[in-house]
Length: 121
Image (tube, rainbow, N blue to C red):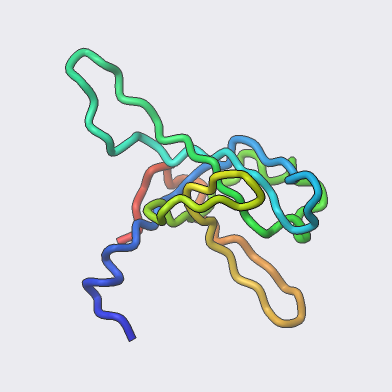
């Protein structure tokens, strides 16, 4: 069990997949480019606020033989995990999905009307 305070530390955010490609020499890995909406980082005066674009490496390739079908999808992501290097690629978050022992699989996808950058409460 974790406390509600521990749970509140997890930043769950809607992101839009901008690109998806198979990681060479792997069966399960995809490299995703994800738009997590407006960056929360402070901007200097006079600078324009930019969107938070992240690279996320995920082991979901077996469920998406044509990974281009992921492009444009809005999904839920954990955005505040420490970066991790997987097969030489830095992963800067985690896509949320569910699967069953009999190979049923689903990404966690918000309603299409929810914009990128929206945080779960």
